[in-house]
Length: 281
Ligand SMILES: Nc1nc2c(c(=O)[nH]1)N(C=O)[C@@H](CNc1ccc(C(=O)N[C@@H](CCC(=O)O)C(=O)O)cc1)CN2
Ligand SMILES: Nc1ncnc2c1ncn2[C@@H]1O[C@H](COP(=O)(O)OP(=O)(O)OP(=O)(O)O)[C@@H](O)[C@H]1O
Image (cartoon, rainbow, N blue to C red; front, side, top):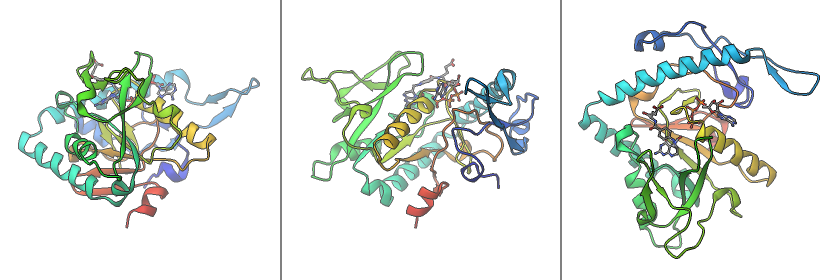
């Protein structure tokens, strides 16, 4: 198994895969695991040069785009009954997991059914509905611009949400009392957990997003902050339908791609990173 957790860090891994483009599911899913990773070298100015360079990155972005279309098509043709069964199973697995029960602060996405995302409604109502001392603090995404800027803002009720231009629910920057919402990048305490959306995933932790770069940029900022503050790194857990798990080597990596620690599919938790293996008994 090619496991990027052991062969490269997410900050330096570059998948060097085929330079040909494929546009059918079978051909895309037949691609062999990336044989090696780009070798980073230092220029005289100290900048990192990946042996891949711009042309190679462009190839990778085309491969990502082709894979996105294939997975989107599969999601659209998914049987609605199967989909809702998988939604139930995934959410139940999350809510019963010890890492979910123990988490005190988390960032989660607000699922959009038009995008065929794994439903998070029950998880979010469970979090917002509990009024005990044990209530978890919830932060959800708000897109600020088209330049990969996304914030994670605190909400305490789903009434705090309004649809954005992409038709995804998100919080206004200010709450009903006129107070600025807490931004996770300025919070005094760490988050324990990220529940992540995406289009395709593999069992080595690779994640293919929708192409905006919002999550990779945000996760990189948050992880840097946690490192500066000596906080434990949060667990990054992606929720995925069975059809979204693809063979290793199918998802090409670029230097900015952040690997996830574990997947939750309808068949259970798939721990990937050492941190996830440690907490998964
Ligand atoms: N529920 C949810 N919230 C989220 C994200 C997400 O993926 N899911 N995001 C994660 O980044 C950010 C928003 N980014 C998004 C990026 C693209 C699209 C979207 O509708 N894409 C279309 C294709 C658009 C096009 O390229 O023509 C699609 O995927 O079909 C939506 C949200 C923040 N909030
Ligand atoms: N940390 C980052 N810093 C700068 N640019 C970034 C970063 N992360 C991603 N990008 C850029 O964002 C764009 C989209 O990247 P990519 O196609 O990998 O997005 P994605 O993984 O599908 O999206 P997301 O991260 O929102 O799930 C690319 O141009 C990529 O180089």
